Structures are given as C-alpha cells and as structure tokens.
Image 1 (cartoon, one colour):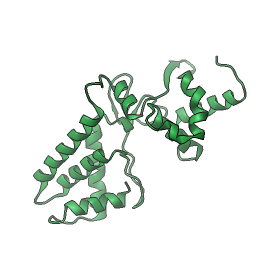
Image 2 (image 1 turned 45 degrees about the vertical axis):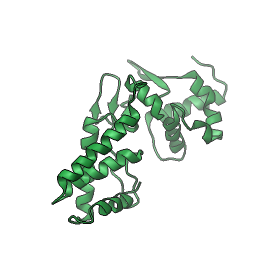
Image 3 (image 1 turned 180 degrees about the vertical axis):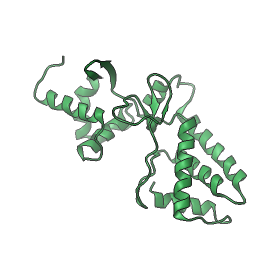
Amino acid sequence: MTFSEFKERLNVIFWRDTQHSNERIYRAMLMCADEILSKKDVPSHIEIDDESAEVFRRINDKYFIRPFAAPQGESGKIDFDDNMLIEALVYLTASRLSVDNAAFFETRYFVAINNYENKIWDESTKSIQDMLEKTGYKRPYTLTRGVRGQKYNWDKGFITSLDEYLSDYKKTWGLSYEHFIRLFVDFQNGKNQRADMIALDKKMSEKSLGFKEK
C-alpha cells in the first residue's frame, strides 16, 4: 500500500469525522507505526544483524526491531506488508486524529491488531524463530563476532538452492526464507545496500568461481 492509498482508506472511515491535512496524517501515521513497533514483535521488522539494519528496539540478546521506514511522497510504500497490520495502523492513526470518534477507532485498532497477532502466533508457534519461519522472515545465517568483525555463517542448504530459487521465483513462495530472498533480489536491483546482502553476494560469487567452503 502507498501513502496515497493509506490516506484514501483513512478518508473512507473518516467520512463523518473531521478531514485532516496530508502533513498531519503523515506525522500521525509515523507516530502510530512507532507505537505499534514499540509494543509488537512484527516479523517484517525483526532483525539479527545491526550492521544491516538500525536498532529501534531490542527484543532480546539475539533479535531486535528495525525502525519503520517513512514513505517518500504519495507513491511511497507503507513499510508494513501485511494487510491486517496496515488495517491496524489505519485505525490507530484514525484514533489519534479523530475529533468525535477516537474511542471507536481505538476499539477497531485493538480488534485489528489482535487478529494480526492471532495469525502470526498460534499453538504451533512457540518462539520468535518459529514465528519467523512461519511468516517467511527467517534469516539463513547466524553471526559470529570476533576481533576482525563479524562473520556470516550461512545455511548450506540455502546457499545450494539459491540459484534455483532466483531462476524460478515461484519456488520461494511459502519458504521460511522467502522475504530474505526478496531482499537479495532488491539488492541486485540496487534497492538496498544491507551488509548481509553484500556478504551473500560475495558468497554466491565465490560459489560460482568454485571456491570451497572454509
């Protein structure tokens, strides 16, 4: 969803309420996104490598939440990729802007955010790692930190299969690493310069040249 589409959705539920300027909606949306991320462990924002993403909030010694990326202009993308979560953001923003219906919109926010959490957490989800696997946000590496910096320890099965996934993107659907592969495609298209993507690109180059695993 773009910021323009977000505003359209907001205006639909605001039809009997006060209308607001783009700037005020934008500021309120950013504040509400931060409020959600300060309380909820959103899988699309969970990271393990602080050289690849800025730390907004630490969950524990391993995991942290990255900041919400502000959309750039009307066509800028809302930095939540789940429709239920975006719906929650819409209602929370509405509750902060509304003159007459704040309590109603806040109630709708709690319904939406609870529906979202019930989707990503269920009886089979016992840990953050389980939740990341379920939602496709698992990382195919662990980190080893030393005096020379950090080392990426890659999942060998992932490295072996990555070329196949990139040649037939449909094979990534439903994978625990699905969204990480999308980040790598974005990296190849110049859309990010994450440290883990740079390390993965180097790893795949070494693989193509026949370098053996150390």
